[in-house]
Amino acid sequence: GAVVSQHPSRVICKSGTSVKIECRSLDFQATTMFWYRQFPKQSLMLMATSNEGSKATYEQGVEKDKFLINHASLTLSTLTVTSAHPEDSSFYICSAREEGNSHEQYFGPGTRLTVT
Amino acid sequence: GQSLEQPSEVTAVEGAIVQINCTYQTSGFYGLSWYQQHDGGAPTFLSYNGLDGLEETGRFSSFLSRSDSYGYLLLQELQMKDSASYFCAVDNYGQNFVFGPGTRLSVLP
Image (tube, rainbow over all chains, first blue to last red; front, top):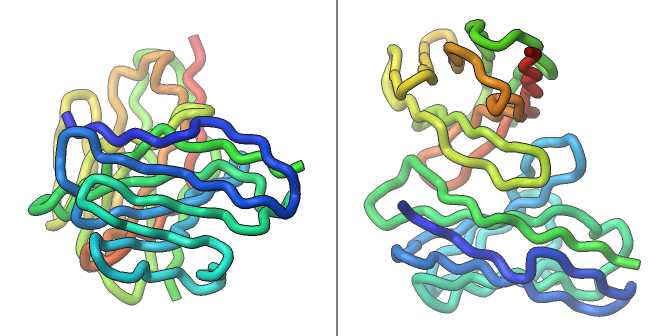
């Protein structure tokens, strides 16, 4: 089956620093990757959609200068949280959609970010 | 705007059948998916309905009525390991996905 990895699984950083999260599709090519954030006991909120080789499409209310997304290849997308603040602490999950399969998303294991 | 509604919590006993409903109001609609998420884990895909009717996958089935903007997930022969959160999600022409608020299912012995 399709596997998506995320790295790191957990990260603690100080306020004001930047954190990069990687999302990789291990055994398939992902034309589209999605980035979500999820607060405890809440639903997944789509932050942005990234397509390989083009700029990400951000959802309303998501600051594109704060959450930098780069989809450099068909197997890798990165999310950089810049100038992180405690309110950015959350569970960040990526998902990938396989080329030719528009229905199913394969989710990564998530990254728990804690900003102190 | 886009909104989905699900019951917040459902409780059932092992071996029982439970139905989790989802109603949606979205600007675009391509299909309805269902995902399972255990605490601390990532969502996993369960089922997808692009057309009206019932889709069956083992113990799980999903139903869609596009005219009613309504779907449900049916879980049969419940097991303890089915205790998790279940999310419906609208596929907006493959451009993005909007998730419902989630239903927390507790399966009791």
